Structure formats: C-alpha cells, structure tokens
Length: 463
Image (cartoon, rainbow, N blue to C red; front, top):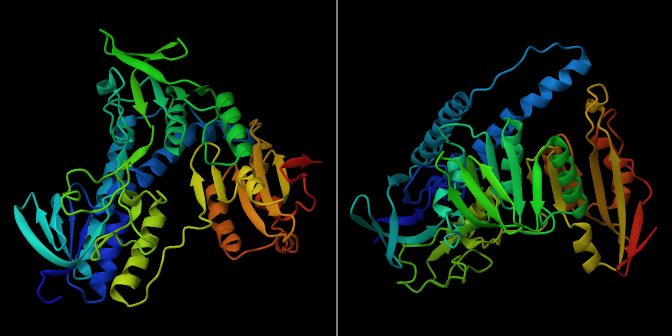
C-alpha cells in the first residue's frame, strides 16, 4: 500500500462516498475523494433535504386553514417563491461545507474534479489534469434523472434537479411519472398554489407500495385538487408563442402548462468514467455489478449506493459504506443487509412503510392475516378536514410474525422509522397485542387492532 498515493480513493462525494472516506480516514488510512459538482450529493444538494424543506413549505396553507377550527384567526397569507429558494440555498451551502469539512477533519483530502479510472489503481482528475494512484478505489457516483430523448420536445422539460431552482413558480405544471419523486413534487407544487396534473402510464401510482396505501393516497390527492391521469403518457411537448407548453397525451388530451417535469426513473452515473476500458462489469442499464460485499469483478474496485442500483435510498448507501470499511480495512467481511428497509413517501398525507405489502405476502405465505384501520385522525376533528388515516399490518397466520406495517397519515414517516426496529427484530402480532397504547395518539391503532379484518388463504380472501 505504501507504493500508492492513497490507500483509498473515493469517486463521488455524496452521502455514501463521504461516509466511507471519513471513516476510513479516521482509521488512519490515506484517503482522497473527488466530487465534480458539490459535496453532499443527490440527497443533500438536489434530493431528500431540499425536497423535505419544500414539503414543509407546501404544508402551510392547510395549517392556516385548519387553525380556524381551533379558534385562530389567520390573516390572508402570501407566498414568495424566491424567498424559499434563497433560504433553501443557504441551508444547502451550510450542509455542503459540513460534508467537506468532515472528510478533511478526519484527515482525508478532497478534490473538486471529475474523475476517470484509467487503470485499476490509477485515477485521472480531469479538472486538475492530475493522475493519482490508489490501492483501493470506491465508486459512489450515485444516479441522475432518466432523460427521455425519444419524446419530441423533451428539451422543453425539466427534471427534479431543476425544479428546486426555477426562477418563477409556475401557474400550472404537468409531472410525468408515478413514483415517489413524481408524487412528492405533485403535492409540493399543489400545496404552493400551482395547478398540478400528474400523468402516469400505469394503472395506479406508487407501484412498489401496498395497494391500500396507493388507492387511498390517490383518492386524497384528487380530493385536494391534484389531477391524476393514469394509463397515459406524453406524446409530444410543444412550446407556444407565449412561452407556455402544450403537452399532447396518448389519451388525446392536450394540457397547457408553464412547466413539464419528467420523473420517469433514475439511472446510474457511470458514463464517461473509463469503466468499460478497464473491463468493469455493468448491467444493461449501466449499473455497476457488485457481489454481496460491494466488490466489483476487479478485486480492488468497489461500488456502493445508487450507482449499483440495488436499493436507491440514502441510508442504504451510508450502510453500504460502513460495511465496505469493515470489509476492506478492518478484516471483518460484512455484507450490507437489504432486508426489511423502512421508507417514507413525503406526500400529503405521508406514507410510511416497512416490510411486505399484502400482495407480496400473499405470494409467499399460504395464510396471511390483514389488520386494517381507517379513521379520521384527532387533529382533523376540530378542523373539519375530510382526510382519513390508514394503518395496516400484514401478518403470517402460521408463525404470527408481522411481515409488513403500513401507515398513511400525519407523521407516517416517523412511525415507519420506529416500526422498522421491531419488524427487523422479527416481532410477532402477539408482541403488538401485549404492548400498551399511548393515548391519545394515532399510532395507538397499531397496538389495538386485535382481530384480523380479513385473511387470505392460498390466495383467496376469507372474511
């Protein structure tokens, strides 16, 4: 290792790459890390963090409206888009500086440069026109929004990256896609007063989530005023003389909007990195193939996070980074555990989920018990808001193990994090039943559903 410039060189300064660099440097390893844009990566700069800030901003109109039922008189409110963007930028810059400082504070060296691998142990830093050598190389370059070059007029569209920094808040927007990014931004823009239409090719939004959550969220979003068009895609986007856009759909409809946002998936950032030249194996979609320990087919090159297209979540990338350090530098081979991962969709209302959906459970277990509760949360009783909360437990009838827990409603994301702990530990429904409720809370429903709503035996529903 002494013959190389670095014991570890990391390409990509997002959450996973920075964690690996910082922890390895703290172990006394000589570490370098290159990031071509801004340290913090997708999550901090153009993903989770700014998105959650915008979610908060978009919730205030409902808070103002609900206040009247609790005796508050709220004067007419106004919103300034540019103020939100400026305040977001200030917070993101603060976090970016922290990410960079943490690596350097641990003893690592940071580079603002695009990096290419020219040999299994050699990295070329393009912006610095410099070549460095490393014993181990970790690729953590993440992903980016999938483009749609086949769509006529695609050059007029924006992606989630640009949505955070629009010069003006549009009066009307069309968002194409049905995943969590599309759904979250539909709720954000609607909450900020934008006429919002969600267009999705599938039969229901959020394809990987439990069907009860998907349907209920769909209905609630439409009640709020968000237009959702399923079984539809855009055929062309045309710019009008007045600067607005006409989106022609396969249904024959034409939507006239100020912005069209494409949220049709994400692809790994592996282009123009020299990976093909060194023989690194990749999937057809461009993701880097790795084994259970995040090692590629080249012994000293590893990859973690979205660039591997395993589970595209920030905490997963961080977990994979920690496992990588254990494996590569501590002599403790550790495979990332991708089973039973809690996640949230910051829609309005929120979704929090962990474990198997009902459909997934029915395919794998002969006897499945479903516990389901739909009710108006207490916070909406005085406000009069017509919005239901949904809680659902999916249980293996034979072992009584809780296979999945799903929540739709206020603070569902917070509940999902806490539910992830007992489900990861293999909790049973009996454990839920003997747990005392915290009253009055919405979450108490999770421990007071004593009888199954219905069962599914051998694929057939039984009341």
